[in-house]
Image (cartoon, rainbow, N blue to C red; front, side):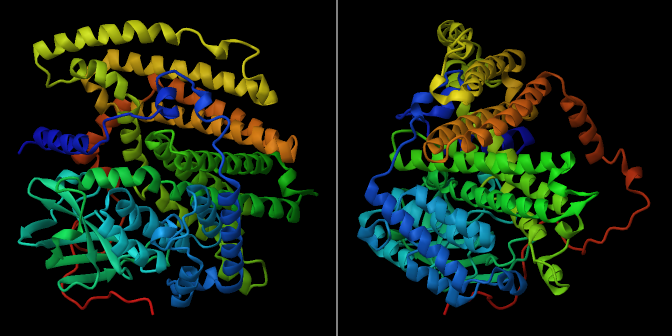
Length: 623
């Protein structure tokens, strides 16, 4: 099969798995189309008093438990979450936060699921990963959405009680390209027989239940698999740059027999199930990221006051002050994005597939920057481990650990590069519906002619709407006080973003999908506008109890975001993308191998892609 054919096959597999219908409104989708629908997010949806009360009580209980029973330094040092910690959290209901009470869970809103993860993530990111991987992408979410009543009654109570689940999609030679999936599930009477190897199975080393993606014929299906089924071997427990306490492994399936009743949904729906699950499942990462950034504010404030250089507190020096301002404003905005998206998930009136993806992309990128700046503010102490700091008599601040732990968030559940492509596909869905065949290089002359007529009707109505809007009126959004100007900027810029998308389609037509630098910048602009909106909505609500202080944070964040937006627009058309791509091709061809002279490579010899051979299973049961 040619490279072009392989690309087309992978693209088709991904396209078939997409949710294609938009039955509910989407704030972010309209934002990318130049239609700033503030009414969809303001006022932000509210929870009932009863749900709020139960949620607050649970978060307080988790806080007390963490403070009294969890030693994050021990987890970092031993690279393992103690069994009694897992059991204690299970006793609180932390493994069934969003599972309904009917099936033994707490039945709490996503807002409080996210607030709990924000809290846990600020204290011990590895522990937050254990909880979120179990509930966001493990067995509970796909069974809640696609499972039969029998499956719900069989598996959800077990998950809620603390039996750990894991999600198995990635393989040694398969990352974000599901067309290459090699694990197979062959029907044999009332069972399926699974064979294959899964990589980076978060929670897989200690899991009781697995969600496994496997190929049934030409399509991919999803199964619930008991982790102790004969033929399953956890080949090894992987270790990483950060998150040293996570139980992540390589799992091999050899003639593993799974009851046909454990098929989730229908055959061939596996990828759709995975993608739909992630619409809300992705909310766990923004929550953890927001917790990281909020912790960074605390450390930056305390250190900025405690450290004195050249007669002044370091936080008062402009070079440091600008970093502290970035950390604080970013933390407020990330919490705003997380809260708004989770509230919309609870409300269920909006389709949040783009919002959740934007939240994941934006929070993972900005929180890492905030933690990186914290390490810089702390100087040498930021680079030193907490254990070393404490050993020589200073406060053991784990800044370097938090930075290491957070790095994976830009890769987990879709790398930033893949998120850019996925969001772009959803954001330009209206364009592709109207003119998809027009820019499709494979389309016939007749298909192009039909697409041209459709596009003419769509753009004749749509383009005039991008000329002027409420953002041009100086009195618009007055209820937001000092933040009104920022919302007017968002409205104007959303129209500019839509026009830029149209210009890109006109310029590159069928080649647009390969202009990943251009598309990525469009998405980043949309993410900034979404974050600005969320920060303004949160500040307006918070100001009722906190006065002007939330406005000050949101105002500073919006000023920072506007500078980033301006720079992104400049780089849409003035960049080195084509030169970079050409140069990268030369690098891959070995043209510049002379640059590599004068070094020694410390890498351990072995194949680039491989699987562990032999050995006993390293799976362990939480006791």
